[in-house]
Structure formats: structure tokens, C-alpha cells
Image (cartoon, rainbow over all chains, first blue to last red; front, side):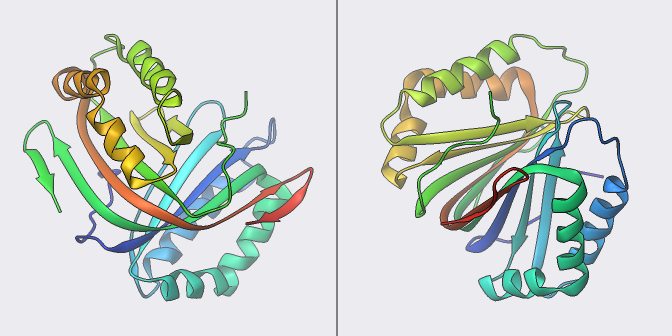
Amino acid sequence: MTPFADLPAPPYYAVMFSSSRRDGDGDDGYAAAADRMVELAREQPGFLGVESTRGADGFGITVSYWESEEAIRAWRLHAEHAATREQGRARWYAHFEIRIAKVERAYGWDMAGGHRRE
Amino acid sequence: MTPFADLPAPPYYAVMFSSSRRDGDGDDGYAAAADRMVELAREQPGFLGVESTRGADGFGITVSYWESEEAIRAWRLHAEHAATREQGRARWYAHFEIRIAKVERAYGWDMAGGHRRE
């Protein structure tokens, strides 16, 4: 499966979540919870896509894309999401930063297909 | 060194660069070029910070932060940056997506220090 989100033309909104995992805690339920949050996000109104990666040093970036600020607000208030965020602070993360942004321009390139602009 | 960018309060601008490396090409000068681009970006007017990570599957996300759209435009036109982007298409990347966004809100959390809002 491609790791790239298949998004409509801008404008849309992005939630950029940068995080560092705690040292030496092993998985401790993290991978299952992360998978579940992506599954749950996909079911939310206004969800457009998500891209996520984490390096061997434990630092990761996840960007989720949404149709509107209202959709982001509703996802933030989702009860299961809120409960999992609480677990994230209690068990998995050492530090995180969240930035909410309006995407104004986007373009892509593929070695097979060349450039694409939106 | 912390992988987190130390940013001012919003608003500011973000360039989100998602990419997949080609299979089986080894490093081929990539790491040195990536380090050089970060070094060069830090010298540009309006540069605020950068966060970057890549997983074992070759998919990576780099987000650079800028004071203004003008600063992003100038960085895009920088000759050495443009030459390295050309190498990226010719040698290192299979696919990339770039999204340019205006960051409107930001907050963070640290297990030592708790919440911070901006």
C-alpha cells in the first residue's frame, strides 16, 4: 500500500503531529493503538488522508488531512481518540508538538509519471 | 540534539515534503546532500526550523518552517537547492509530494513540563 495520502486539490487542513517515543518502553500497546487511531480517523466526517513515519531514533511525524477546521475539532473531541491521547501522554510519548495548518498549494512528482500540480 | 524545531508563536508557514526513496540504490550521496540542504536552509532569510524523519521502509517526511511565503519562494529559487532537487529526481526519489501550508495554531506537551499552548 502506498504511504502517500491521495488528496483533493487544496485548500484543505493539516494536523502535523511530531512526537518522540519514550526510551526503552518497548511497544507497550503502542502499535495497536496507533493502527486503531488511523482506522477510527478514516471513519470521521471530513477525513481526507494521513501520512506517517518514524525513524529508528524514535522520532516520528504523522500528518492527517481534513476538509475543514470543524472536522479537526470534531475528531479532537471524539471520546475514544481523547482516551487514547491520554494513554499517549501516560505511557508512550516523551514529547510531542501539534501544528494545525491550512494547505494552500500542493504538487507532486513520480519517477514514472513526472510532475503534477494542483 | 532535539529533533523538534523551536518555533515562534503562529502564524508562520510550513513546507511538508513527503518522499519515498528508490529501492536498492543504497545511499548514493543522499545523506550528505540532505545534510547540506538543511545546513543551507538554516542560512536563508526567514528560515524558522525543520523536522525530519524516515522509516525503514524508505518513506520520509520533512517539514521546514518559514516566516513568510516570500521566504519559501526565495529558498525554492536558490541555485544550489534547485540543483540538488534535480539530483533528487534523477537519483534518489521514487515519488514525492509537497504541500505548502499556513500554520494557524500550535501546542506541545512534554512529560517533564506538561502542556504549552500558543
